[in-house]
Structures are given as C-alpha cells and as structure tokens.
Image (cartoon, rainbow, N blue to C red):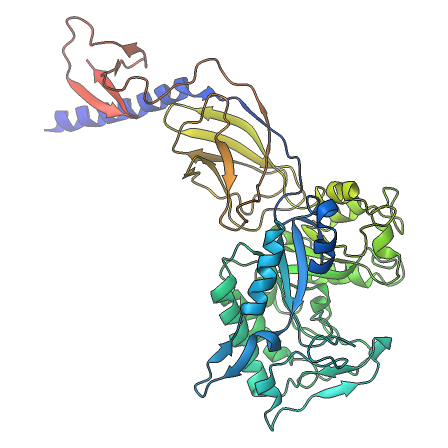
Length: 494
C-alpha cells in the first residue's frame, strides 16, 4: 500500500513537471500590430453639451466627454407620505441620449447653489432644492445679494432634517438607476457655490448655509456604500479644513473618491506663486496618491477671460504647459469649454491635448498555446483606467480587468481562446462605454510562422512522452503503466 502511494505521488509530480515543460515549449508569439489614434473613452478635454453640439462636426472626434450641471428640482416631483421620493427622469435621460448620439459620455454634477443662475425658475440665484422641501414651514433659505461679485445667491437651509435626508436618498436612487449606465462616465458631488465646496463672499455658517461637518462625514460614508462602482469626485476645496472634515479624518481620507479642480492652471495655482492655494488643497486631500484609485479632473481656470483660450499654447501659460500639469496631477479629463475657436484651441490641438490625459494601454507580449492566449499588458499613460475593461478574443474575456493598472506597471492576462494568426480579433471590451466607442491599445509584436491550434488534431489521439515529444502512437514494445490527460494531451508514463 505504501509503495502504491509512493508511485502515485511520483507519477503526479512527473505529470505536473511534464505539464509545465509541455506548456513552456508550445507557447508561440502571435503577431499583434495596433496603434492608439484617438482620445480614449473617459479621458480628455471636455465641452458642455451646447458647445459640443454646435462644434460637433469639427471637434466631435477630438473629445470623448461632455459636462453638465444637473438640478435635483428638475427631476424630483414630490415625496410620498412614506418618504419615497417621486421622480421624473425624462429630461435627464434626454440629455444623456443627446450626448450619447454624438458618441460622447457625460460628466454629471448635481448642485443646489449657482450665483446668478436662472435655470431653475428664471430668477437669479434660485436654489435647485426640490419644491416639496421649499414648501415646508421649517425650511428657511438665506440670501446674499452679490457674494464675491458673482450676483444674487440663495443658500439651501442645511439645518433642515428633510434636506439632509433627501440629499442622501437622492444619491442612493441616482446610483441605483445610473451607476452602470454607459452614457455616464463620472459623477461630481459637493456643496456650496456650483457644488465646489466653497461659498466665497458669504459668511460661512456650518449647519445653516453649508452642511455641518457631521453631515458631511455621513455623506462621504454614504457615497462609499452606494456608488456601486460609479467613479465619483469632490472638489479639491474639500481639502480646506475651514469647510470640510475630510483631510483631518483618516476614515474619510481612505474612501475611494476622486478630485476635481475648478480653476486648473490659473496664475497662482502652484505653490511658490502667491499662496498656491490649489496645489495646497491637492496635497492636503490627495497626499500624492489619491489619483491611483480616484479619478482626477476638473475645469481650466476662468480667473481671466483668456485662461481657457491660452492654456493649450505649446509654450505654456504662467510658466507651465498643459502636458506638464496634466502629468503632474494625473489628469483624466478637464473642461475647456471656451477654448474652441481660439488661437490654440484648434480641433487638432484638442485631440493632441486629450491624448495626453488618462490611460494608454499597450501590449508587450502576445502568446498562445493553441487553447489559451496570454498578453503582457502595460499602461503608458499618466493615470489608471477607473472602470472595468477587459481584453477579449471574440466574446471571450480575459481573466483580469484593466481597471486600476497604474502607469508603467505590467500584468499578465489570460484569455481562454486562440486568436487569428494576425491577432486581428484581439480587442478591449467594456460594459461602461458606448457601442460606438473603442478603447484602443498600442502593440508592435512579430508573430511566429506556425501558431498551435487546439483543433488541429481533432478526431486524432496524439501522445506525448516524458520529454514532451509528440508521438503518433506509443513506441513499439512499450508497456503503458499510466496514461492521463494533461493540458488536453495524452501523456504516457512507461
């Protein structure tokens, strides 16, 4: 009995070694030639829908994203007695469809306050708080006639319990409906003017005209629970401890959220130029690593009327080039709505600048053994891909997602399928892009002359000896003591 167990252990070990030897000997390189030719989905410069529609013929292929504020009051119709929020999402879906028809995805930001904004009811500065809350006797907004010169502004009443409950429930309901919708790329959230985490020019009253820090903590923890894979961002101003508890709370800092900068590349953006407030906020809430898990983006500065028109100057603006700053902050997208038509904002320059953002997938090795294909994949970009995508052959997807692959890092992925000889059926698929969008990749791999095929010996039994050599049949006079199927092959142990 002991001798038989020893024989079994010996045989299994030989089979394992043989499996490795055979597999190692039969992997062959597959030709794979690809090139990234356009901005990648979920990256690049961004236009507002009106501008994107107007200039679609010229700029449509130079961008992948559009941006829009959205108003809770426009989609909320009321609240039932049991607390269920009643919605009509038709106007929002119409917007998503219009953007998608141009082959683009939407970056969404819901907001309550917008100085001088008239899109709620035609009156300047009206909040986008749903009407059913405004009608409550315990709800009282505050007002400033001209904060920081931006014009009339009303402020949501953050002392009101129903506003707090609604805000949490609203994002829950939004995520349940849209977290996996390929028409949406990213969600931006926040409080204050334009949801940018500040109310400049107005006296800050936490718990009155701005959420109390205790509620903000609840909000961040709530978003962590309900976002369901939808990348969400907050303003870098959440790094300012005057407004926010985030930077001082490790539990909040560990939440996987991204950052947006609403005045990117303005004159005093960087430390060493005046106060460098923006870079200080990036450092406070980013710690130099947030980009590895949370998408980073924002909006080119409107501090002067020329900032958006000049930031694409190849010589730079305020001492820094777009490519330099995009790489420094690992930018995936950036709103540049006023740049088209300017001296430097040509469609060609838009395309070039967009391709300097986000991820760039490349394949360094491509091998197959006739049943499985292996790819050595790297990221040549400046940021990861933040949503799931897979290499695939036909409908067969790889075993690992490309999501989270950091710049300059590598990983092997396996696909349980064999490609064509020229690798033309190898592609990248994602459930989070539109059907007309394509995630491209770079590759320059020479193939071997003969590619093993699992179907080549169909209907015929092929045997292999312990050296891994192929045998048409067992050698004459050999007594077969053990035969097994290893890696799809009949292996003989004499």
